[in-house]
Image (cartoon, rainbow, N blue to C red):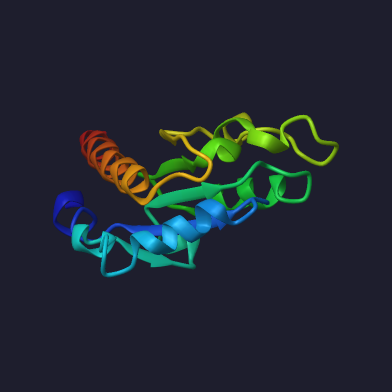
Length: 145
């Protein structure tokens, strides 16, 4: 059942946890005709209850921490979390600031880390393709149980 319905068009929920928007701009570039991320069947959505992949940019700030955990809990299983950019992975240049609580993996499990400041569209696309493979594996495990 998973393969037939979820693999064909995985939906991505993109959330900016407090970044400079550099990685967000590169994610939008991935959706442009030049890179065409949608050729993999990926759709960018705004509803966590219909999402399969949680794409997070920026460091976790004091204000965004509870929202990230809430969004994560609303995404149905199987789900994959992708941390895009140095800030989402480790806190990046904002690490140690009074309002920054470092990378997203302190609060929710991360499956794919995409390095860079800002991450290039090629790296983002490679990371999303890897996330789709992980999503398929998680879906198969869920079906067996």
